[in-house]
Image 1 (cartoon, helix red, strand yellow):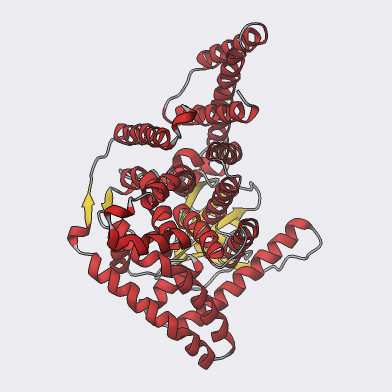
Image 2 (cartoon, helix red, strand yellow):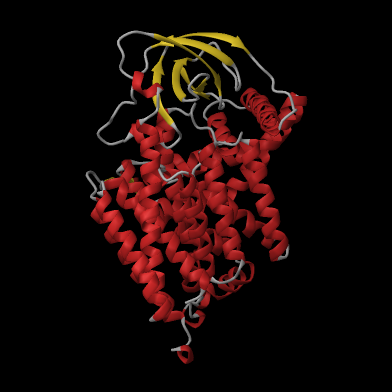
Amino acid sequence: MTPSKALCYFCISFAVGIFCESFLTIPGIFLWGFLFAGVACIATGFFVKKPAAVAGFCLIFLVLGVARLQISEFAMASDRLSQLNGAPEKITLTGIIVAEPAVKTSSQKLKVKIDDVKSVVLVTTHRYPEYKYLDAIQMTGKLKTPAAFLDFDYKNYLAKDGIYSVMDFPAIEILSSPHPVRGTASNGVSFAYEKIVGVKKTLVKSLNAIFLPPQSNILEGVVFGNDANMPRELKDKFNATGLSHITAVSGTNIVILITMLMVSLLALGFWRGRAFWAAIVLIWLYIIMIGFPVSGIRAAIMGCMGLAAGNLGRQNTSGRVLTMAGAVMLMQNPMLLTHDISFQLSFLASLGIIHIKPLIDYYLTFIPKEHFPRWAGFLGRAQHGKYWLDIVSVTLAAQVITLPIIVYNFGTVSLISPITNFLVVPIIPLLTVFGFFVSVAGVFSAWLGFIFSLPCQAILFYVLKMLDLFSGPWATKTLEHISFLWVAGYYGILAVLIKFLKNQQRPTFLG
């Protein structure tokens, strides 16, 4: 067994430990038993069989995964501020807004880091007055524990970001709007982030001055990853057609965008190595442009690791690198595994592109042309350029592997998603580029912005027509009360099918 394969097993064991502890409270006596069994296996492996040593280390890493999640749960339970949740009297707190406010049509949410205890409170307040990143505020209201919903674990969803308390519509007073000095590294990062957020707001305002809804809503989502102001009716159309990933910073969106950049650069004649580095730089410029959203950063890390792994040229090595990257992220925040859908989607989409995309490519291109003479010319051009086939295979690979997570969490599945993605996804990079040019040009000249907006208008007209055409009631299927066993069964069958298809591709002389 190679060292990289053994390390991959250790990372998987670490994640399994976190997963088991998320649903079961494992008694300490069992953990000690696993630990001693692991040590015994390692000792046996040194003298008898090396696989026994690998199994022993796997048991130890499983215990470490359980312990890592228990540490996070202990930190949540011992948070000083959360002990005031549910108190009948109002309290006054002062703190600093530590993230860009999430602005919606009639309200906004602020993440406020409290001065004395260093805890973060999620504050919901009115749409106006506007607040900014790094504003120091004083608020008076009642602290509450995040509400529990039947179909959504909102408490743990916030807990993964270190938020254990919420405050709804308190009385807020702005104490100051500090601008950090560049004297320290942390202040330098805060200063840079503040400036990036300011530039983003200027560009969004420029975009909204040129386009009217719903075009402006779509562009704001596609270019800046913000769909908060999108009307419910339009969101439902995107969900029904399976295109919602193009208007938000989601794991699937980032992974598909990274791969599409790679495919486009290769189609333009870049060497693979240059295309790889150019795609990495472009995706991080995009993350910077949209203001470093946490979900976007996680998805970009996972997507870039998947792209780097694919660049190594071997699927086994690629999957191992991706697994190790996921384990490092879980070591930093173990609650991502079960409470962050963006992490799940970005990891699975990357895994699908590594393992499923080559299979789809193989069966899309390995078509006996003598049986389809009319398509021979098209298939020859497609195999030469590979652009459209890559679009189809990337989209299908990401959707096949993320389908159970989407259905399990949202209860609906789009029946025509592969068709709509094939018709719409190829032009989204163009819409992103032209939309960004429009927002920049509009800052300096309304006429210049209008000129750049003409291609966007044509693309948006096409996108809206596709939404209207494919968003009927027949386009989606509602699946209520999906069991986790169904999800596990789906992935079990998918793993067996992938293994079988890979064996079918293997030359006979390799056995």
